Length: 300
Image 1: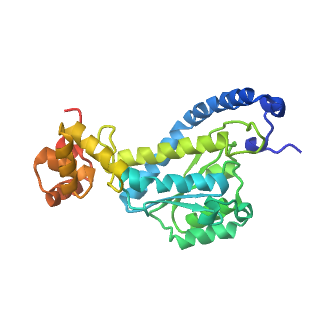
Image 2: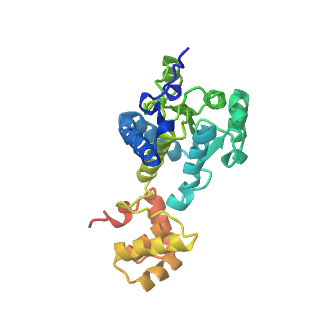
Image 3: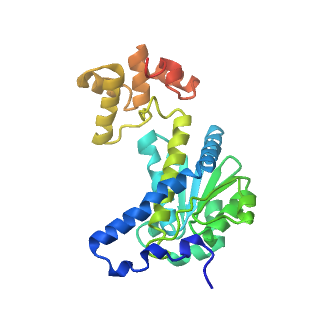
């Protein structure tokens, strides 16, 4: 019997992939990948709604929690891990739960995805509650660990969403606040959802969190001004942002960033207003962290 899940069906365009040359394999994979962004674009309204739900959670002190297994889980954990260095968020604000625990990030624990009770237990362990938004990621739409986690999250009062790459059932649509379903089609290698489905997942997660951070005041113009200097690369980036926005030479930008405790957003307010660090932070807090409300639009 043919598997009804789109992610498990055979791709007629790659039926003889094992006979192709290296360059032909590259061309085939690239041709298949071209449709991924278009499939994600068709889910624009659901992605935007998810973004809104994440922002609503943040505004009440809640969290975005990803739940997944295998590639889906790894991509969720990766996206969560990138938020603090990129946008200066608290590490708890965006979290990733992966079946099998963090050991599954580097070594496959495939059987871990089969136990819905483990997903529920992971949600309990994180203390998920009414202020949180939990996004389940399962490209096939059937992973028991993810369904168990989302069911428990709903029981605990959280809002929930589901990201998959096969047509969602009516039951799934009715169960969650939002469902995102980019239909990227069968993989080049049947069932290898780390490929097109994985790429679609990365695109969707990038868009959700980037948009949520923009709407939360973490970006000024198109600059990530809420980054916290924790390494030489980020120090260089922070100094260059201040050099551009305040028209400062490197040495003055470096001194300003140092006086701001390595916080670019505070340094920008200090440089534009002449305020000290404490008052700059107070002004930012009163403006919900939106730099433009304190110093004006970046283009002016």
